Length: 331
Image 1 (cartoon, rainbow, N blue to C red):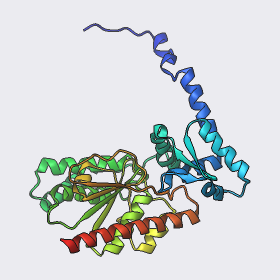
Image 2 (image 1 turned 90 degrees about the vertical axis):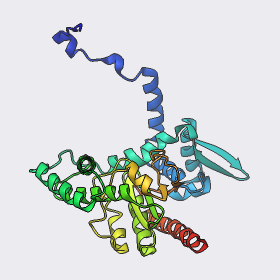
Image 3 (image 1 turned 135 degrees about the horizontal axis):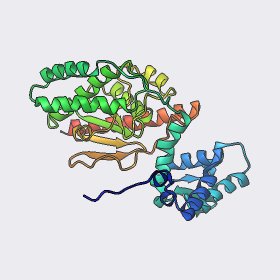
Image 4 (image 1 turned 90 degrees about the horizontal axis):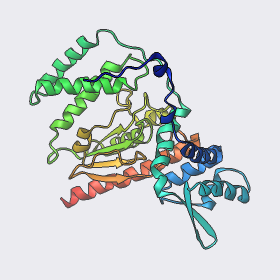
């Protein structure tokens, strides 16, 4: 095999040619400048979370106590960089997210924004004797799931620990969370879809707000007739502080409220998967029904906005639960 000699000077030379091109950087900077205004970001969030898929300028005017020309100016800035499109109907103008840039808007609002607003600490406090603890957990779960092979149980436990550790801030409860997460994953693998209780999976990006709240509300209303779970495509370290009091009111225990990674097995085990601002991250599994709920992010909302989001989710959950009850009566 031919070897390539790299001198010290070459090793220290910056690979500037691999950097973003000047044209792309200029174009991106123009868009970012258009977005670098608090009111415009709020407008973008309102449009993206509107269940109608669009917002009227009269709705957006309620976001701030400013004049109508000021509102129109901010919307024009967003339209000029093609982040939104507009359509006049009668006396009002309606705004939509440009379909071509929607994935980028989703990433901005649902992935980047929550992390930028609540930056997690850089350090992670590790554990000692992890291997011994995981081996004990593997032994316990092998007894609970004797129908599954030992290698599979071991793999699920270790993968669960690793995936949770990526976002953990403290190690205090990591092993107990691993036990809960791994047990649920193994239950997913063995679920009897034909005879089991209907199961709903709520999915958002961080699993720290909307999906946690939706699952708690459904479990509280269903009385065990339907089981709700939640997961995130990029789970946060913990449930958002603005959501915790709402979960307390519903009666969800602390053991239940931790962000969990989305797995294929969780999707396969669900009868309905409801996405809430996470884009197209969910695998498409035959026989699973999918819905997308355009709901605002409580991690970014005001206290009043969080209450509105909770009520919106509760209304949708009641409608969903009614559909299960109706189907059960027909069956």
